[in-house]
Image 1 (cartoon, rainbow, N blue to C red):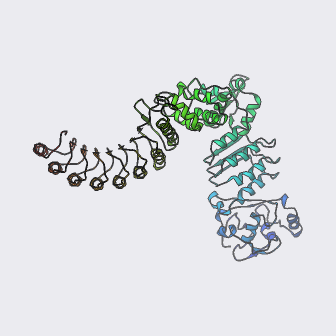
Image 2 (cartoon, rainbow, N blue to C red; image 1 turned 90 degrees about the vertical axis):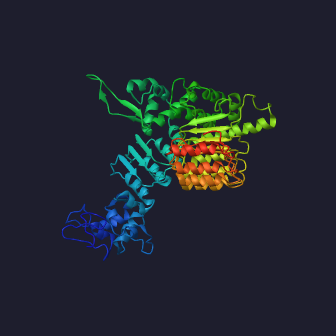
Image 3 (tube, helix red, strand yellow; image 1 turned 180 degrees about the vertical axis):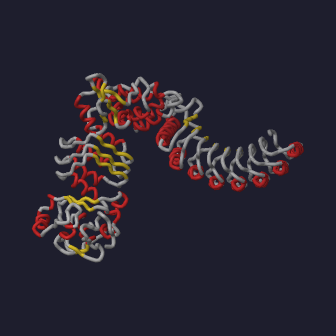
Length: 621
């Protein structure tokens, strides 16, 4: 026997009998005789085998050890050239394949045991076969957990049919890291409402499920007054609390759907017991609470999580309750620096542009200051969806104000000219959303500050926007990021573009070296470059980089008037080069900062001498 296992798809070693899986063909009757469930004196005779062939639905066949079998690929492949007849002699692997795929003994319950990653090769059939097995009267399984099985909505459909079967005993179902979407959730919801469904716990983790799917789950239930428990910050509650706020039918449906978890009874006295309840996930409770607030036509007056407010806005978007939405946006719960961005999220969730324009007209300082500055902190890529929505609405209002003056826009409305994103964590996708708003032809944003871990890929997206004819940015501040010489190379290309309007560039505290400085210097000498201020404080620049800067400063096309090189690795030799450049007739520098470098008295003496030269224009050091 080529593969010898005490159990497995290859067969069994019992009483000295072995079955070769590679050298011999066999009929199914012979393979079944090798089952570990039969003793040495038992055989599947012709009469018994014929009964199995004619009544396959009465039998369950388990093929153990698929992951240990050398001919896995053969089983998973296309074996159509062999006859579809359980009585026909054929290779063992072919028989196994036809059993699994239902080509022979159609209707029999066939299970395979295997590690999940190996059984993936069998494709979608595994889920269907599993569901068939779970419906067998002999199956006593009550808990099923499938992790990283790549199950799709098709598999869920099979599972939902099984959930409604009277023989189905499953009470706990966990599907982790699968490919189930909202459509699969909708199927599950239908099954949950079937009288035969016995599920009390349902967990869907890591799936492709959106708020639509969550809504489908919650629509199978009434909207209980979970808001009260949420406001009281009670993630768990006992029977006395649930009896006062929930109807018995609500509790049963919540438990039946798996959204409400009920713990084991515990004693509270000599003869009294109680139980603790909790929602299986806080988001479920938040969603139900939001529905309750909308149903009651009110908003939270006490502090709630941000998710509750976003859910309320999303629910209101389908109900068109503008008055309640305005009340939500002007609530004290959405004010203050900590929740300054929540209002933008709710407005974006509501997705009504006309309402949004009316709101910003009536509340011009909801997102910006009186001098046209919008400032938010700690944003993520997802947050940029809401940010972009608000910026686009402001651009529309700017257009209306320009065209119709006071007819449509309040005198109080101030167009946004500066955008500040402090301590944010934006990758290329988030920055791209911001850039799409900046190139809106009606946007007046001329100054952009992004402080956070922006990388070279993010800089590349910004540079694309800088070259767009509609982009009006003149000041770009990218302090305390992770920009390297690669990102500076992208900036060089943008600065040389005819449409680029940048005059001020701040790249403080990044990872720029002399190579990056050389790239910038190439741009400074280009006729289309309009930079007048360059701040490179706190990078990794040495005298080599300074030499490149000095060459650029003496070029007739260089418009630089302010240069900040504080906190680098510059020595007296670099200072001497800068002093020589400052005396050149083409040099336009009026401000030079060299604090916190490696400069001694010798360097200071060079500066003093340069300041006395008639061609030197420096007025600030």
